[in-house]
View 1 (cartoon, chains in turn red, blue):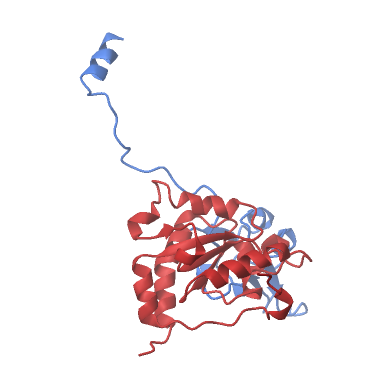
View 2 (spheres, each protein chain N blue to C red):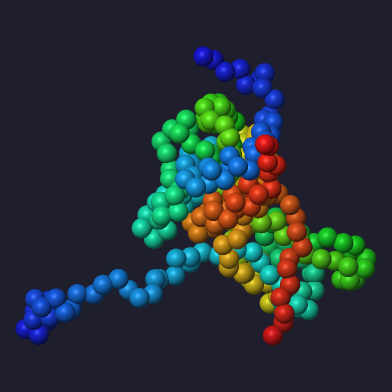
Length: 162
Length: 117
């Protein structure tokens, strides 16, 4: 199925999620890492989360191999224009409620690539970002803090729809 | 030699996990802080910054007063050139893990000030 990106308006609209669904998600968080133009520094910090030093699985956080299994998309890189199709397909494959976390400076603001013709200026230009983690690259404990305390704070801010 | 062999055989020399973990973070991350009263808002750090993560806001004509230094965490790459460029040694980096922000992080914030020594 061909995707006609010119018919889609970016940034994609904000998708509200209620607090209870987010709280349930936070107990066993599954994230899908998506590289949209990253230099691999942030990717290496994400890989370090699975090692024995940081060990994200003791907190119930896991990295999954398919966006269809994921709750959260971790974007690294400034969203290159060539990576937009990959981003759109991955984002639409992720089941609701879905959140986007921008990891690193490039995903936050475009970083050192901001203003280039080949990239968007960060994930905020294509989608509504739940949490952004600045740093070039952010240290693994900063990413862990965002995945635990940051997402709890984000969930507390959302409205409860009963 | 024999003593070492005896230790190895009797398992007394086997070292377990170290009591203290080595420092996991050797790079400069976190956020810059200013020492109170030292910053003259000269703008040397903003000129030295390769990614324009620092800027001076305020009137040029007011002679330093009313000019403040602003920082964008979403642009800083932690190269520490601002620390080298700062003549009055006002900038330091504060390490911390709570660097995340809810929503997009593209804001300019004035740098926090800490107490001078």
